[in-house]
Every structure is written in structure tokens, then in C-alpha cells.
Amino acid sequence: MRNTLFIFVLLAVSACPAAAADNLNVSYEQLLREITTPPASASAPEAKAAFAAQAEGRYWVTIKASDKRERTALLEAGFDIVEVEKDRVSGIAGPELDGLLSSKSVTVLGKTPLAAYASSFTKDFPSQDAIYHNYQETTDLLRSLAAANSDIASLFSIGKSVEGRDIWCLRINSGAKGETPSSKPGAFFLGNIHAREHLANEVPLLFAAWLLEHRNDAEAKKYISSLDIYVVPMGNPDGAEYDIKTGNYQYYRKNMAKNAGGSRGVDLNRNFDSWWCEAGASSYPGADTYCGPRAFSEPESQHIKRFMETRRNIRTHISYHTYGSLILYPWGGSDDNVPDERDRKVFIKAGDAMGKLTGYYSQKSSDMYVATGDSADWAYAATGAFAFTFELEGRGFYPGSAIVKTSVEKNVKAGLYLLSITDNPYKVI
Ligand code: 0X9
Ligand code: ZN
Image 1 (spheres, protein in one colour):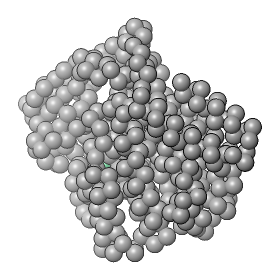
Image 2 (image 1 turned 180 degrees about the horizontal axis):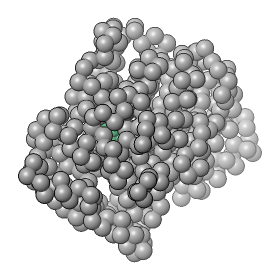
Image 3 (image 1 turned 120 degrees about the vertical axis):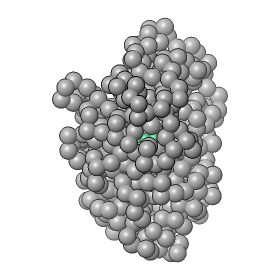
């Protein structure tokens, strides 16, 4: 179904370049329409078997944890916190955590085999979520958008992943193209550095599609002509592909690095050089919060580093994650406030404004838990960009297809707000 759409867009674009903007109108609306009407088909039995094998020995666990210090300690022990409630956290634990779960220091409130837990989501397993964009579909859509808007949009790779996939960046700028520097104020939207957070690809991807479709509306036009806008929707393409490739979700978080000792993956949101691996991260390679052998050990985080360091015009940034309906601002790796009082006020004001537009709750990142090495802390510390982490809405990592339309629409508003302050973020205070 999706392939048909891409072929249509590509044919239409190549056959009639002058009508490209009209075709994109079809494209964006069509994308959202499809999202509300998912195809109904059952998962293949062999895919179910593959998931069962992957889920073997892994559990969905609820543990007592009453404050952020306890939450941080659990992250350090390698527990993959997924949901935070007042007095407890829930998440995924593999066999390596058996010792922790049976120790006296931990109160386990619930423990369900991951396969049984996941089966409650069967109606939204990948065969029914075909409207989400996998890596090839993301690539195709980005290419279509760039081709149909070649006067203001260009596509380039910021570098390759561990497994050699290009990490694509769509740039929207009425003057500079590709990797040519620009002195216009820049905004950088990054998605999906955690593999299983597929909605975090859709939101920036479709925000880019929205901007280009509305390129002639006064507001979008203003930003397109005055700003340097970058969208990297899929920051961890290997992990995102691994998570879906059997047809059943794997609950996979990390990249696909081959670790010493045989395990797979580094948590890219613990691999940045901001108090690297000091808190809320694990140095155990098998853990979901594994920080890697050293800061920036991973090509994906290295590319994001280089990308931002070589574009010092970038003033605002969102890294999209799921889930929690939260807007988080630095610091995440320290209990402290950012030392610059004016900057702190900008974070609070802009976070609250985007909170109103999305219905998300804005707070200092470490108020959830302290976790060092995250990309937003690094981005702010190293480049001065006002860097936010968005935890998009939804119950679970696989919230189904209907949520995409809702989430994209509210995040278009937040994205536009961020663009509106990118020329001078200090104007909000
Ligand atoms: O733990 C993370 O990396 C993010 N949550 S997620 O469920 N998407 O994995 C939150 C990062 C917030 N940053 C800090 N608290 N440092
Ligand atoms: Zn995440």
C-alpha cells in the first residue's frame, strides 16, 4: 500500500516537475489518511516464533522505586526503565538481571514474561503497522520530498551507521543546499535514536513533509526563507530495522554495535560526552543502558556530533523519543540547573509554550531521572543550542497507527513554535 503511494509520488514528480507542490499536497494528506485506516492482516506464524525466541528469558518487570535516585540506580544496574509512576517503574529485564531481581535490595511488584506481555499488543504488531515508515520507505519519502522541492530542499547523508546504512538529513533552506554552510539561524530535528521508538521517526519525517507542503503559507514561507532547517528522522536506522525485521517487534533499544563478549548494541542516548557513563547508565555491554566502551564510540553518535559541531548556526534542537508525553530540557545528567540563568529561563518558557501546544508536561530532564551521556545535554553544552528531548505520547512503544496523525499534528505546532524562536531564542524571556 505504501509502496504504491511512493511510486505514485515519484512518477508524478518526475513526469511533471512544475506540479510538484500539488503532488506533495496529495502526499502529505494521503500519508495521514492512510495512517487512520491501517490494513488488517495477521502476523505470520514464523514471525511470531522469531519474536518468541527473542523474548526468551526477558521479562516485563515492575519494581518499587519512589524517587529519581532509586530510578537512576536501577538504570545503572542495567534495568531498562520504560514507564515511570509515582512509586514504581516498569521496564524490560533480561537474564543478566536475574541476580538483581532476586536481591533483597529490590522490591519486585510484578514480573511477566515479555512474550506474554507483548501478546496484549498483537493487534498492533508490524503487519498492521505498515503505515509506519521503515528505513527504505523513510529514504524514499525523503528523496521524493527533496526532488519535488529541489529549489528549497536537499538531501544528504550525515554518515553511515554501524551496519553501513546512510543516516539521512533533509535540509530546508531557500539558499544553501546539501552540506554548504549557511549563516542563517539553524534548527535541527532528530528522531528515533532509540530503535523501538518508531513514532519518533514519523513525527520529524512528517513535520518535514508538512513544512514543504505548506511552503507557500505565510508562516512556513517565513521560516523557509529565513532559517536553515535540518531534519534527521531516523538517527538509528540499524536498530529501527532490527526491531521490525521479523515482522514482530523486538523491544530493541540500542544500535547494532558488536560488543566485546558477544552482546549487541550501545545505548546511543548514553554515548555522548556529557558526564559520560557517570550516572543512569551501565558499563555492562549486555545492558539496555550500556554507555559503550567510551564516549562517542559509535558512528551514529559521532555523526551527530560532527553534524552539530560543523553547523554552529544551529540554535534550537529537538531529539524525539517515546513515550511519556514529556518535554525535557537540560540538565539530564545532573541534578543542577544549567548555570546560565537566562538560558534556563528560555528552556522553561519555550518548554512550557511547547507543552501547551502538545499537551505534554515540560520539566528539567533530571527530574525524571539522572542519566548521563544523553544527546540533548551534549548538544547544549557543546554548541549552546537550546536542546530539548521530547517523549512523545502513547501507551507503549507500539501504540498503533491511529496515534501518528494526532501526534504529528500537535508536534507540527510545537515544531513551528521552535522555528518561530530560532532567530533569537532569548526573545521568549
Ligand atoms: O532514558 C532515555 O534515554 C530517555 N527516555 S527513553 O524512554 N526514550 O529511553 C530520556 C532521556 C532524558 N534524559 C535524561 N534524563 N538524562
Ligand atoms: Zn528514547
